Amino acid sequence: MQASDPEAVARRVGRRIAELRRKRGLTQEAFAEVLDVSVQYVRRVEYAQTNLTIPALVRVANALACRVTTLFTAPKTMAVKVGRPRKPKAR
Image (cartoon, rainbow, N blue to C red):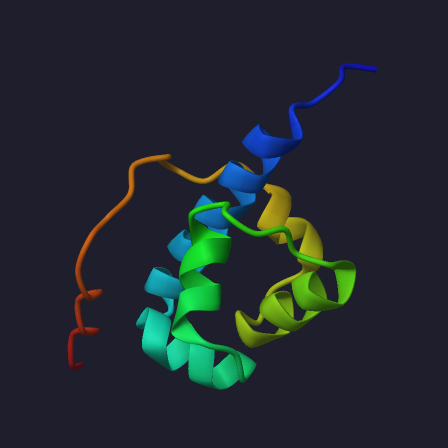
């Protein structure tokens, strides 16, 4: 079994959460409101500056309408995107 660097895992999970949040068209502010946490907390999670507890992981997964295991899949990119997500195109 290969050992993992906890900080690297936290960075990947944070980037994955940000990726899924943007995919759903949520700003950090809107996501924080859904989770009933501060925007600063969301930022710290996405930038791996704070650790998530298991209950917090479950709440995040529920808010993103995904399984907890989805949060542990590799993000498409580790690049940090700045700015608001694009609004979904009207059909």
